[in-house]
Image (cartoon, rainbow, N blue to C red; front, side, top):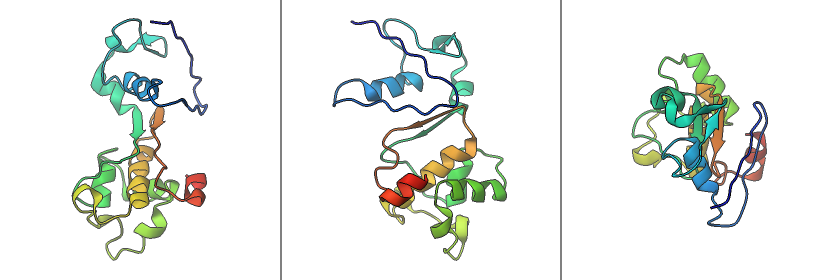
Length: 160
């Protein structure tokens, strides 16, 4: 096994790129602490992730994957999973940041509209934008996108 060390600076944007099987998803899973490394350590702010409270740490992470998970409830309830005490104004701000407010505002029930099982009442791009809004509303210290804009057109991808 080779040694690998990299330091990500706060406030910067990074891309992890490479061919299939090169460890991109593994790196993300280690950062999210879905599992611990068998060798070495993963440090955040100089602290070994194995030693910190997992629930508290995960509250500080916003993650959006290529296939976002939405629950069979309203857009608002899906966003409240990111921040349970969010106000309606914060929900609108997050939806706007994710370029979702334009289509959400056209629904008769706006963000109280039910998305259906797995978000089935929405297009792929709409689901991704709701998932992005859910991550944005947390105002996380670390925001991780795993091809989170793959279903968006180039215009919306650039805006997000």
